[in-house]
Structure formats: C-alpha cells, structure tokens
Amino acid sequence: MNNEKVNIADLQLLNVATLTTIRDAFSDAESLNMQEFVQVLKLAHEKEFQKLKEVIGASNLMAEKGDKSGGRRTSFKTKQILHRVFQKIDANGDGNLDWDEFTNYLLLEEQGAVNLREALEKTEIALQDFPEPPINAGRYHRESINAILKLNKEQEYLTCSGDGVLRVWRENDLHFQRATRVGIRVTDAVLLTRSKKIAVSAIDRSLRFFDALTLERSGAVLHLPSVVTSLGYYHADGKEKKNIEILFAGDNQGFLNTFTLSVNDFWHVGTVESYIDLAELPDVPHGVKYDGEWIHDEWITNINFCPDLDNLVTSSTDSTVAFVDLDRNSQIWNSANVNGILTNFDEELNAANSTNNKRRDIKKPKSSRIVRRFTTHSKEVHSFIYCPLAKCIASSGLSRDILVWNAHSMGILAKLSGHMAPVKALVLHENQGNNTKDRNQLVSLSTDKVFKVWDLRTVSLIYFSSTHFGTFCLTPIYILFSIKIYRQ
Image (cartoon, one colour):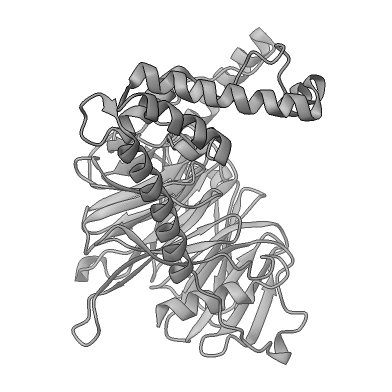
C-alpha cells in the first residue's frame, strides 16, 4: 500500500456532477476533516453510480464493472487510499480541508501533468534516417544480435547472432565487409585484444576462436561443463604479464570457467588450430591454465573485470551481482580436480532427483573468492556497467528499473524508472579527454526496442526514442547506426 501512487484523478470523480456535490459539502461547512471528506467522496460516487444504473440498467452496469456482489463494491481501492488522498491535499497539515485547498490541489495536479507531457515531448527524439547501403541487401542476421564488438585498429564492427553467423561492418558507413559461419547457434562473443582473436560461445558446450582480421578458424574449447551464456575478457598490464590474457566463460548453471592463455605459447602460427579439450583433464595444452568455480545459482548473464575495483564482477538470473577477487588464495578448482567435483555434484543431483521423482535444488559449493554480493534486485539481472567517473555501478534486468549503487557500500544512489519492458543492455558514454566536454551518460535499451539516455550526474532523463527501429532480426544494421550516433 505504501508503494501505491495516489492521485485524485484515479478516483474518476472529476466531472461536473461530482464536483458540484463536493462544492455543496464545502458550502455547508467552511472545512472538512478526514472522515467528512471521505464521506463526501463516497456520496458523490454513489450519486454518479445511481445515474449510470438508471441509464444502462443494473445488470449491464455490474457486468461492465466486473462486480458480482450486487453493486455494493465501489470503484474506491481502499479506505486507506482515501485517507492518503486527504493527507496529500491537506497542504498545511492541520487536519482540515477547505474549498481553496481542494481546488488548488486540482490545479497543481493538472499543471504537473501538463509539464510532464511537455518534458517528455522535448526529450523524445526521432532516429536519423540513413540510406540503405545497396551492398547490405540480404546481408542481415536472421535472428537477434547477441553481441556487437568494436575491432579497434580495423575500424570495423563485428556482430554475432543466434543464426550462427559472424558479420563485419565498416565503421564509417556500416557497409557490409565479410562474414563467416560458425555452424551452430551462438550465445555470445568477445574480442581477445592481445592475440587478436574472437572467442564465440555456442550451445554445443564449446568455444570457437576466429582470427579478428580474416575470420579464419583458430581453434576451440570442447566439452565445457554446460552451455556458456556469457563471455568476459581481461589482460593485466606489466612486463611480466604482457603476453598473458584471461578468458572468462559463465554458463547456464552459474559456473565460471577461467582460461589463462599465453599468447606466445598457446596460439599456433599458420594454419594449425589450437584446441583445449576439457574431457582430457587434468591434461591441458602448453600455455593454458584452467580454473572453474561456482559463482551463482542460475545463468550468468554478464561478466566484466573492473580495474578500479580490482574485482571480476558477474551478474545472473538469480537476481544478484557478485564481486570476485581473482588474487585471493582459495581452494579453486583447477584442471586437476574440477572434473571430479563436477561429477560428484551431478551424481548427488541425480540421486536426489530420482529419490523424490522430482527436481531438487542441491546447494552448490560456491567459490571462497567471492568478496561481496549485491542482492537488492528482486528479479533477474541482465546487465550492469561500472562508471569510473561517477564511481558507481548501474544494473538492470527484468524489473525494468535501473539501479545506480555504490560498488563498495552497496547503497542505492538512485533508481532510474521509465522503461516499460525489461532492460537488456546498458552502454556507458564517458569521455575523460581534455579536448572534449566531459560526459556522464548512460544509454539503456529495453526489449521493446526503446532506448533512453540518462545523465548520471543529475540522475535525469536526457532524451529517449520510442521509435521502433525495425526488428532486430531483419534490420540490425539500424542498431549499429543508433550506437554510432550517440558515440559522436
């Protein structure tokens, strides 16, 4: 009840007849207390209800209102809500209302609604209409785009989709460049900047590697514990680690696979592909270190290493965001024992399920490297992003609200509301350069194809677009155009 918005217009009494009844009540008394005000509203409603009953008939009125109790129920939600309406109108808090207070409240409510509509009209924008490049005809993905990667030196974008195809587009005009077929449904992709490889996860519990320039196959990881749903990447600075890069693969069981790869030792030169077969553990190829640990109870949806926090951050459909200290010493499951741990867990789960003839949730042995969790979200978390200038994290998901919170204290700083569908992606537009104006802008994209741009300094909406820029599966190139607009 405390979270329910109260507005006198919601009571559907603001017509000439009901206002006349309320005005007569104020004429009889200079002011009304809470009980008297509630009685007047009920009286005004009963008169209006009686008129409708005489015009269209009692049975039709009951059917129209969905009232099966003989018309005794009114359109009021509860008496407590009416009391809150009174308290909202009672500006001076003296426990009494006069006609001036009542009418001033109505005027302010109307003006506030007008101002809100005008503000939304000013912030709404229309997407720029780009001419369709002839070379792009027939080159679009047939299903939703799962990832968009910026290929740095090549000035190109790479997109991957559930249709199992990787496509490359030129950055300046987004003309189609080249493509390659993975051969199976793709779930995510990430760019390995040091080795210049593209890692692609697929539903056959594998990772495929492709050369970022030619899109030629470079290797694979086979027989992962489960289907990988999210990929992450990190490489440390420093001379001693300049040839080391780390690939993270989170799966649909909440399990995080970590591959530490040596650029010089693992990747073969020429046409020979580099393979890692986890079915052969504890044996792994030279130049590879494999670790695994349970971080979440359900799907891992996003993985990102935050250098400022010195933590790996992951989100999940279990409604939490976890912080993992990669340097913390723990009994991490490595290539020598991870297979046995996973096998024991599967056997325990199968035994429990067969005993009760139904699925039971067995507690997963979580990693001891988890330093803290953000648990404020009530539903699935689909995306998050760290904001270095604002020193905070923004996260979103199924609940449609974007939460902005302190990464250390976990305290909520702001809640950005306005999306009417789950928010699937967050993009940060920050610029710390001295030659351009600093920006703290957050771009959010929801599943109904509406994106909004927020100012994190003022925690306010800058502009949004409700224009549905085509469908993801037919014209995803327009998504790239939209991203390009707001990066300029």
